[in-house]
Image (cartoon, rainbow, N blue to C red; front, side, top):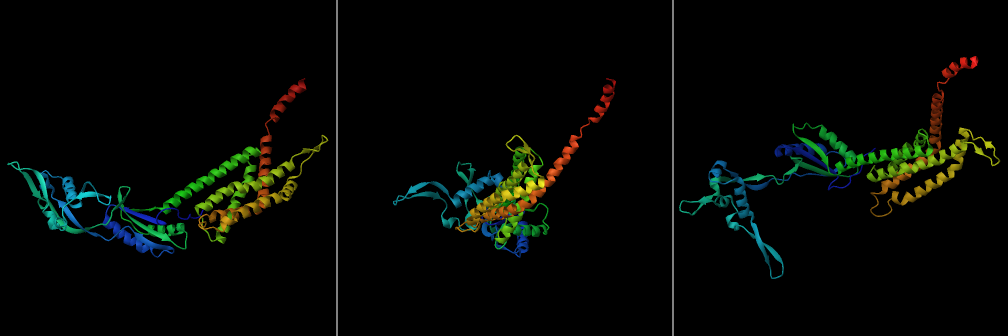
Length: 404
């Protein structure tokens, strides 16, 4: 089965590079972007790595802070309250709008690292009962630096997300080319890549579609075996199922479509539609081969197998064509995407039209041939199992009959 079109997600292609060190991930991201940018059909390539932003780094002196009874969490909470602020209530303005009241230091007391170094911390009491106050620079060092704009995590590891869109090619084909390019890159131990977003959804949808297709075939076989009371005749009937794929592929090529989730739904629909023609044909042939009464109490022998199949093809051709044409013309508005926004659903109608046409034509040729082979195989099994071991018993009974 071909690739599926992208469904869902912000962009059609998403790849996650996972590892422990953010700087190493940035290096690998640059290498990956150089490898995948030349891939045909890949556009709008971007990554989650953004330019580093200026930061003020506060490195706690653990020994000095522990001697004063301060922990890193206490220092962080105190800095957050004084720099970022803390909401202590709300205020209703004269225009009847409610605003949060946020309390924090004045801008001139928190704009520079030197201002932060002078921030006071209460760490207990002196001998005279007054509060003991220390400055931040006594328990931590404050310096300017740069830091990552954002840090993404997946599965307890840091990650860098690479995303892109697809133009002019199927998303599955582009994903396969990206996978080939990534496999050519030697990743350090502990680093890996993982497809996500729409590509992951496509893989999951492909698995679900294959499962649905397999269950449809199994249920069709069970129904046909119970109705025809045979394990071999349903196989002849179901030879029309692979014939649908020929028409599906040809129709998608003619309409320049790709294998999408909607076309897969159309294939599952075809599993039940195309067996109808084979049932019409073989059911008539089987009944024609059976002996019947002429109304005067005399049994009329049935037709030969070849004659029965030729008669069935002649008689059932008209209803097969009628149902096929009805289905084809019913799917024409959907296949040609005549309404706005129907381009996504069009592959379903295209797959149904192509599969119904080819299966209806080839059913008249392939299914009778398969039925002949299955009938010969059934007769062969009957001959084998009909040779019951009764000759020895009859031979042993001959002396008794002679003695009598």
